[in-house]
Structure formats: C-alpha cells, structure tokens
Image 1 (cartoon, rainbow, N blue to C red):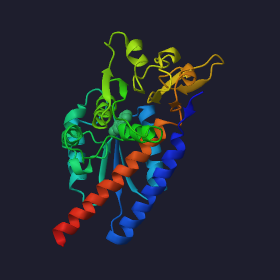
Image 2: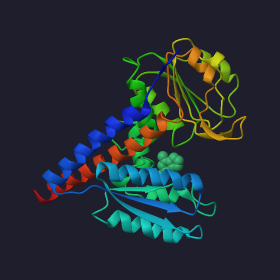
Image 3: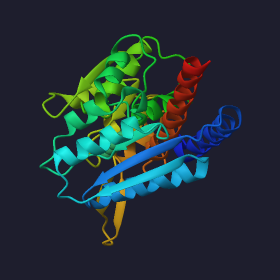
Amino acid sequence: MANIIDGRAMAGRLLDSVANNVCELRARHGLHPALAVVLIGDDPASDIYVRNKLKACKKVGIASREHRLPATTTQRDLMALVDALNRDGDVHGILVQLPLPKHLDAQPVLDAIAPEKDVDGFHPVNVGRLTTAGGGLVPCTPLGCMMLLDSVIPDFRGLDAVVIGKSNIVGKPVALLLLERECTVTVTHIETRNLADIVRKADIVVVAAGHAGLVRGSWVKPGATVIDVGINRVVDASGKTRIVGDTCFGAMDHAAAVTPVPGGVGPMTIACLMANTARAAQMAAMARECEYG
Ligand code: GUN
C-alpha cells in the first residue's frame, strides 16, 4: 500500500516558517508584507480559492487587499487597477485570480504585473527565468508539487517523469522544474496517444488533467510516486458531492507514494503563495535598502 503524502501537514510547516519570516521582515526591516488579490465576477470556485488565500494571509501575518470587481469590468479598468497596484509601494504581491470572465484577455493582464510582484510566477520574465537560470518567482502549484516530491524522493537524477496536462499554470512549469532536476520528462496532453503506456514507464507521475479518475491503478509502475493536482467535483452513489483527484484509488496498490485529494497539492499551493509573497516582500526590502543605503 502506498505512502500517503500529507500535504496539509507539510503546508502547515511551510506556513509556520513563512509566519516567522514575516515577523522578521516586520521587526528588522519595518516592512509589512502585503498581497493584493483581484477577483473579477462571481465564479463560485474562484470565490472559494480566493477566500482560502485570504485566510492563509491572516494566518501568517501577511496583509491582504481584496479587490472584488463586477463581471462587467472592462479590460481597461483591470489594466488600470494592475498599474495602480504596481505603483503602490505598500503592495508586494499581486494575484489576479483566473479564469477571467470570457470578455477579458488574461495574457495582457499577466504581462502587465510587475515581475517582482508576480507571486503567481506567470509573467513572461518569471517564465523565462524558469526556463533558463532560475531565481525568479515560481508558480505556486508546481513549487508545491516539487516540495511534495522532495519529501519522498532523495535523488531525481535520471528518473522518468510524466506530466499529464500542458497548462501554463501547472503542466509546463512542473515539467521545467523536473527537467532542471535532471529527470527525463514527457509532457502529455489531450491529443497524446497511448497515455497508459507512457505512464507505465514513469517513476514520477504528475497529473493535472482535470479529469476524475483518468490515471488507472494498473497504469502506475510499481514503486512510482503520483502527485495528483486534480480537483474534480463528483456526485457519488449516495447523491453526495465529493472532491476527487485525477487518479483512481487503485493507484494505492502500485505506487510507493501518492498525494491525496483533498489534502495533498491544494494546501501546498496556498502555502507556496504565502512563501512567494514573503519572498517578494524580502526582495522589495533588499531593493529599498540598496537604494537608500
Ligand atoms: N486559478 C487556478 N489556479 C490559479 C493560480 O494558481 N493562480 C491564479 N491567479 N489563478 C488560478
């Protein structure tokens, strides 16, 4: 039976360490880290995610600024808000919750966020750093996936990794992080043929397909580690709504370690957002001290 990687416990430890960093930033540099969260429209899932992010801010002592805008917000209004937040010296992190309502174009908005405040790691400068020298802000879910993997795998070199899903938010950055650790990485997507055969060869499986039960137990190589990023709402036999991942329960019989859903990647994503915000604030403190001596 696989080891279940406890994402909640790991996130709790990370949040404790972020809370210490926040205390130190306030005491040593007189700087109170602050995150601006922008939510447009009334998508219920986004509403829950944003509430959880704001709750985490409170827990670690990061100040939060919530900007809730109506679904009718124009591109111009949103760009003006991002511009104002970029200029605001008291804001260290900016997060625009995705997806945006259909009439808005996300990419120009993400491109407009100052890279040093881009705690989501979606700005092209941070994406570029991820593909080259590193050192930029790293997207939260991929960062959380790597920490979860690090807790069970001592050496990644030469391992076969498969990433299922090629999104900009998870699939592509996680593939780059695994490549940086010298895994042999295969990225699969909706058009991939013989997914089962590819998964069967993998020592590491990161699945972010948004498809309940996509990865069957029989696909998982004995001893593999499975990181399940999926969050799917399903109605079970008794009519109750449950949250399940992208992996069938049978994976437990084959894998060495798996992340549960809920309680795996989800809590780590939020904890990494807090870590990125504290890091952005720390960089701002250093930049300020370099400027003023
Ligand atoms: N929507 C789903 N995941 C994310 C995320 O990591 N960041 C933002 N901004 N929106 C999301």
